[in-house]
Amino acid sequence: MMNFSRNLFLGKRKYLLGLVVLSFISLIYVAFSTTQSDDFDIARREVLLRRIGHELLLQSGDSISRVLPIKKISENEYQIGFDNEFTFQTDSLVNTVQRLLAKDPFANEYVVNVLNCGNASVAYGFAISKNKKDDIVACIGRKQPIACYVIDIKFFDCPFLVITL
Image 1 (cartoon, rainbow, N blue to C red):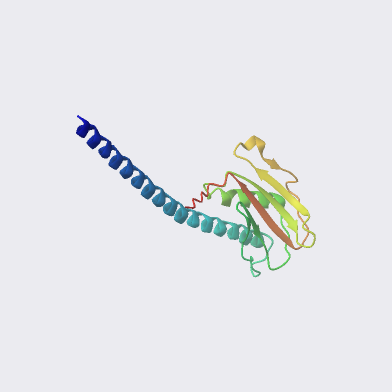
Image 2: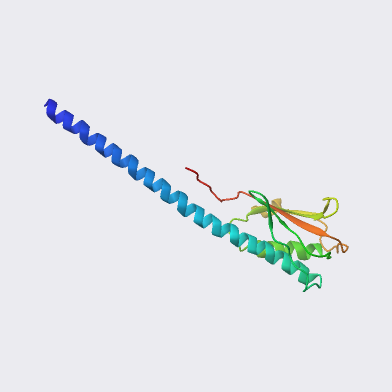
């Protein structure tokens, strides 16, 4: 009987060791597959942000100047810069941003601030929420003066999970 219980104990240890190894391998797989997917999602988001800048320039009558490279300010915050000064219509900005970010499955909530380049003061801003009644959109229909602007977009509930081992 003692031999049987000793064999049973050794069998349970092997089973437990196998379970730990399998769990570790699964965790490594999830970490690497999530990182690859996240990299793609981040790159796709940056393309959408460049598209926002491109469409704003076109709406202001500028088809020549550049949208500068997207700056990642923090984990969930990006800035769109421009080569030259431009003007924009507030409702066109809101509509363009909402239409293009609707293609980003993780852009459920965000705040957009248009900053003056010289002093970083907010020239215009709005907030979009999951619940439409919580959206904050003001000053629709106003044309902003020609100036140097930077568009700052901060996302909430960012799904990009980073697992480090």
